[in-house]
Length: 326
Ligand code: MLT
Image (cartoon, rainbow, N blue to C red; front, top):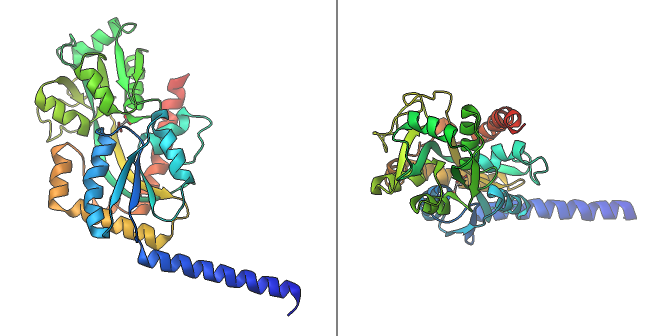
C-alpha cells in the first residue's frame, strides 16, 4: 500500500475505533461514580437543590454522584474547572443563573463561554429571590426598607456570594433600581452569608428562596418581599415585590446541570432522563416545593430548552448589568 494511503487507512481505523469506543462507553455509562461540582459552599441553595435531585438520579443511574464543593470567584472558579474537565460524563456541574449567564457581562475576560463550553443536561429548579435582613434590622416592612437603605447607603452591608453569584446580581439589580451603592460583603456561598446574617454581621441579602425558608421558619432572620409576580406557597405570609411597593424588582433564578462540551449525546440523554425522573418523584418534588423552588414543566426539562434559557438569560443580564455597571 502507498505510504499516504497506509497512513490514511491507519488514521481512519483509529478514528473508527475511537468512535466505536465512545459509543460503547456511552452504552455502558455510568460504570463508576460521577462527580457533581457545586460552585458554592455546602449548605447553600445550589448545594441543597443539587443534593436533593442527584440523590435520586444516583439511584436511577446505579452509581453514586459525589458532590464536590469548589468555591471562589462568585462560582466562576468551579465553572472554569468544569469547562476544562474530561467530557466523558463523569464530571458535571450544578450551574445557575449566575455562573451560566450573569457572569458573562460581569467578567469581561471570563475564561469560559456558557454556550460554547458546555453541553446542557437539565434544568432542575426555578429559585425565586427573597429580600432578607438580619432579625433586628430596623425597617419593619419593605417600604421602610427602601427608605432606610437609601438613607443609610454608606453604612448598610449587603451579604452575597461573590461577583456574578445570584445573590450579588439580584441585589445589584435592586440597588440600581433604588439608586444606591451599599458596601457588599462577599462569602463563598450564601450558606456562609446566611450565617453572617443570622449572627448580625451583615444587614441584608437577596437570596434564593431555598436558603431562606428554613431560617424564616426558625425566626432567625426577616423577609421583606419575594421578587416574583405571585406569592410563594412555602412563604405565603411574605408579600411580592409588587405588593410591597417595588414591581420593577423581579428575579427568579434557576439551577441546572451542565456537562463539558463534547460529552457524548447518549450520555447527556441518560443524565437528562435520570434528572427528569427525579423531578417526577413525589418525595423529590415535595422537598423542592417545601423549600419554595419552582419545578420545571416537562417542556422546560430538555437539554434544548436549557440551551435556549442560557441564551436568553445571557441576553437579559447583558442588558440589565452592563448599563448598571457604568
Ligand atoms: C449558593 O449556593 O451559595 C448560591 O447559589 C450562591 C449565589 O449564587 O448567590
